[in-house]
Image 1 (tube, rainbow over the protein chains, first blue to last red):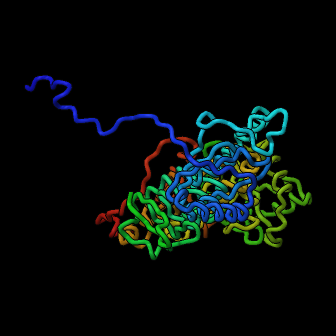
Image 2: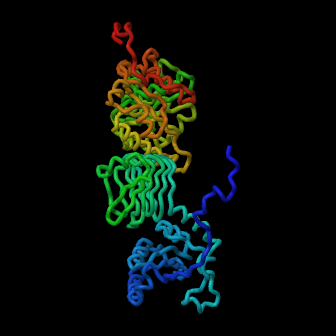
Image 3: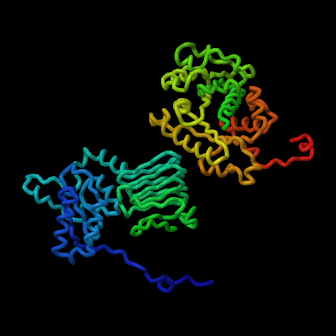
Length: 257
Length: 256
C-alpha cells in the first residue's frame, strides 16, 4: 500500500560512528612483582603530582619483568592503583598466564602493535635486546597454551553433591546443573548456564570486582571476595531467574539480569 | 532403598532374555542377595573365598534353578568389607568377563569401601533412588563419585554410563505432595530414568519368598522391572504406573 520508503526519510539518524583514535596513556612498567615496593614508590610519585594521576587511565607494562618472575597479584595491584585514583585499563607484554590473570581482573590485553617496543633500561647495555613482550615464542607455546586453559575452566557435566570445582586464576563456566552440596570456586567470575543449587564463590583471592552470573538461582550460598549470603538471605524474587551477583561496596548485591 | 531387589530383578531380566549373567553381592557382612534370589541354602563358597584364592570361581558361582543363564556369587557373611581388595575384585571380574555377557554388581549402601569396590570397574551404573529429598541427594553424591573415582575416570576413559531407577514410587502420595514426582527427581539429578518401580506389596512378597520380583509378571512392580531391562537393552518403552490407579468396582470387591 505504501510506496517504498526513500532512504533518507524513514531511516533514523545514526546513533554512533565507529572510529579509531590514538591516545597517549601513562604506562607503569613493572620491574618486579613485589607489590609492597610498588605501593611505596607509587605513593611517592602520586604525592609529587596528585592531579596528574587523578582519574587517569593507566597501562601496566609487564615487558620489563625478569623472565620467570612469577604470577603478578593483579587484584592487589589494581586495587592499589585505584586507591591512588588511577584507572588501570589494560596490560601489555607478559606471559599468557599473566594475560589470563589480567583478563580475570577485566584488564584489556593491549597488542604489541599498539605501542612501540623499547628494551628495558637495565637491559639496554645488552648487545642483542630480545623481543621483550612475548618471550620464547616457539618452544614455550605449548606450555603457554596450557596456561590459558588452566586459568579458565569449562565444566560440561553436572556438578554433583560433594564435588568441588576450582578455577585458579580465572573464570569458571559451568554448562550443566550444579547440585545441592556442590561447590564452585574461582579467582575470577563464575558463570552457570543451568540451575545453581550448590555454593558459588567468586573472587577467591580477594578480587572484589568478580561476579557470579547464573541462569537459575537456587543457591545455598553465594560469595564474592569473602562477602557471602546464605540461601535464607536471598530474596525470593531473585530465585529461579537469571541474575548476577556482585559487590557494591561491602554489600553483596543480587540483581536480575 | 531397593538396590538388592533391583540387582536381582535386572540380573534375572537379562538372563531371561538369553544373556549369560552373573550377579555379585558386594555387601560383605550384610549379605542379602542370596536370600532374595532364593539360593541361601546352596551357598558353599563366597566372593571373599574366591578373592583369597580359597576357592575357584566356578566352585563359588551358584546356578539359578529357574534360569540357566543366571549365576549368583554370594557375599561372605562372616567377614567385613575390607576383605574386598581392588586387585582381587579386578581379578574376579576379569575372570567372569571371559564367559559372561553381563555382570551385575549389587553395591552396599553408603559411599564407603564396599560401594567403591562395586563401582570401581563398572562400565554402566544404575543408581537406585527413592522419591525422597534425602535419597535423591545421596544419589546425586553417588553420581559424583561415579564420575570421579572409577577406573574409567582414573584412566581418562569415557565416563561410566549412568542410569537412574526410581523405586517405591506411589503416585497417590506424590499427588498429596508427600513425595517427589518423577519430574522433580529427573530435574534435580538431570538424568533420564531407566525405570519407575511402583510401591508394591509384590516386592516384599518376592523378597520374603526368594523369588526376584521380575518373575511375578502379574504385579506392576514386576512389569516395571521388565520394562526397565528392555530400556537398558535399548528398547523405547513408555513409563507405566506413573498415574494414580482408578479402582474399579471389581478390584475394590477383591481388595485391590
